[in-house]
Image (cartoon, rainbow, N blue to C red):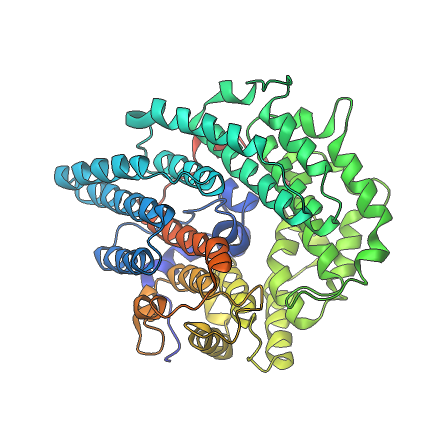
Amino acid sequence: MQFPKISPQISQIIGQRQCFKGLLNERRVFPTPWHWCVHGLGIGQEATGFDPEKSDRLLKISFALSRKNNSSYNIFAHHLLNGILARCEAVSFNSYLAQERSHDEFKSAINQLPSEPWQYARACALLTESLVKVGQLEPYRHLVRWHLERALEQVAKLDLSSDKLRYEQLQLFANLLLAVGQAEFTDLLVLQQENGDTYTDKALQLATTISDIFYRGRGSAIIFSVLAIIGCREQVCTGEQNHLQTLLDIFDSELSDSLRRDSDGVHEGSDYYLFPLSLILNAIAVLDCPDYLTYKRDWGKQAVSLYHTLSPTSQASQITFFIYALDNLGVLHVYVPDIVTFFHQCMEGYIQSTDGFRVDAYLRCTYLIHLACQLGCPDILHPCIWSIFSDTATEIFGSDHYLENTYGSSYMVAAYALSAFDRIGKLDMLFSPELRLPDAIARFQDNPESTAINSPKTVFALIEAGLRMRPIGSCDTPLFQKVHIDK
């Protein structure tokens, strides 16, 4: 596969963001493919304007996904994507017909909301976020509010037995509460359940039931950030139960134990501690609670120390979380004087340490691709990164050799591939003879359980790419314009 060059339009957009200068607040809060593709948070950043060819390609991929797995969620998502693309076309070309088409598709998406509680909650949040970002919430405001309230009720009633499932439940709360904030349905934030708790209370209580710090740390950090964004900061770090302080107490006491954990195929050793810690540090920045940086220990120094113990492959996937946390806290320059050199060292270390055949190679490469673009230096990417990335994707698409690996799902690889190629303005690479994503989707071999977990990630990536076709220069939503990160 030929090494893709950055399109002039994309280079111009990247140039405006050099080395984290002028980033939107939403990017600072949700800066990675893990946020966008895995959890559907912060989707649609860095708008590039409407592109008819890109629109057609996204619809072909979405149609292939619906044809492969004709679930109610995929049908809903296909209508939602159609509505987003038609709306972007209407704005770009001042087209009445495109606007009418978008209205029909949004109505169909609402009518096709899935009934299964997990998918229903995910779909309601995605629908709301999308309508807000394309400026089309008002025609459906009352209906969307009704669905969001119903989704919150259903998620609150889930009674789950494992830390991982409770972590996923907490992520659903984050999606729904963020959607409530985006839509300005503030009454839902104080709505009490039968026991008198609000949904924000329930989310914070749920976090305390997760014993595994890998899940508790990540889930808590995300819900803390969301609560800060929607105006519920005091519930996190003041009052009778200081949730932030409690979380740091746990991390202070369990540092040694977490480093001895067995690998899950991607994470190993210090990964299990630094990944959630980086998210917690970012949450501290969003919460504007800098005093907690030195509670029990110097958490910034701890993160830096842990980062340097990571293997080169782990550094490749952790670097973005790590440096955004430091930058949002205003201390990046203290620990990383030259961020471009730091990135280059990380990339070279990864290239020298990998054979390119690990099932998770696509994941590491995606992080490096996005970060190079965010730093304003996409040309620094070594051709090996693209070779490893495309070779891994080609190998996994349609193969049944990786079904036992958590990160070997074809749907997850498709999501990350979509994200990476869209970011550089080269979505056509997914239609190259080597990848041919729409055809590859027909051969995906994931088992039903894996499909249920991972196909929504492909949907997130599709909606993310669709929302990026809003007009160039699209700013933060009103909710994120209120966020103040004192860096």
